[in-house]
Image 1 (cartoon, each protein chain N blue to C red):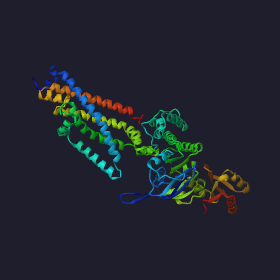
Image 2 (cartoon, rainbow over the protein chains, first blue to last red):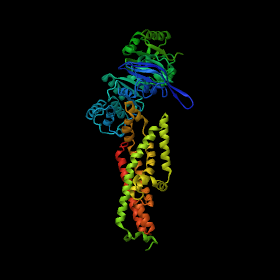
Image 3 (spheres, chains in turn orange, cyan):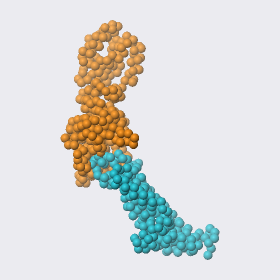
Image 4 (cartoon, chains in turn red, blue):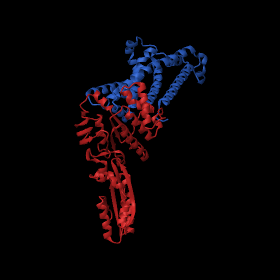
Length: 345
Length: 230
């Protein structure tokens, strides 16, 4: 269990004070993937750097399994850091070392014997899927492969916590997904707590169970990922949810516009399903019940997220009788499906 | 003896080859010994400059100021003046003020600050993220020095060392003016003062060869240790 209690961090700049982190309270359960999302400058990086003591908070305390990370000697703090692995946006590998030597680095620092650390590093290289590349140098790898080395290196000392600081932000979407899958896999295999910092909602949706949204040093919203997607509260959270490319409705707006023009009679309705409702044949129920209604599907998607699935469907309903349309919408609402009429002239 | 005209460069019978060989070895010896000391002193000073830079605390600030000051002073004094200035110091340290041995203190004191500044700049070029990564693994400051700073800046350290070694060779030639021995001394004594242009030319060619070989070996070594672009 990781606890941030009233944690603040202020920097003194030449002309003013900057509050990078402002009174943050968080609890992160063991074995959880906990996302922290925010735009750059929101204070997320500073927040996690206080977790491994690279930055010291101005006030407040940080407890890892009840132990205050700050009230330790430098030596104990270094020991504590060995239990916290960290991966970075720009990988931060040593170009002067081969892949396996990079993975051995934390073991060297921990004083592990030469043969043991080599064997362990080889196993880790294998775990992250880079078998055969052990003796290559980082400059010979792609971005995604470099991050795999970063992950292997972060796991070398059998950490209890893994901090991922924008680890997928420098990668293309395909590679991002591969790295996220790897993190999820490691989380399940090793029962590791992962603190995932990102500015991409996509990463949160894919792997995190809980998420905290940060803005200007403060946590403005914290909830399970399912709830955040279903009912974002803060304005910034809504923006993040909308930014997630697959939930993005830029293309849709033009489609909606042309449909409104072409079918002035109908209504366009956005349905959001969550949990088990996403798997039910709701449209066919609707058709059977209201046989005179015309339904065309404009867009639909189902996303698996940690702890459930979210489906969204945008449909066009048309019937000459307005009352029939309305009762179809009421029927959908009665199924406890979030129903939003988009063009309500 | 004919000292006029271009043909005076090619009077090879006037060259005393055994003293030329002797002088060549003296130049190589002076350069090699002072270079070894310069590497250790330069890296140490560069490290001190790097580690005390931008740190809070009066102790760090004072050390940084002091080392910076000394480095700047000795880097600014022209070598020919420095070597004269250091004569009493050399006498006390090595017991003589003539011969190749006597040139070493001035050579080191002149070249080490020069190299130290390069080393400091090389360390500053290293990605701060890599240093942070080692700290996040629980690494000590020594871990950072031995596992990050030195290996990650090695190509730059070698390239800077090559430049320093080459300037050391020209310093050894200047040291000839106060009787250090070596090719510069020979060119001055047998070449200039005895009006023997061939000796000057041969000494120049040998110095040129040494410089080219050092540059070639330096480049080769840089290429060997640099794994950034494979």
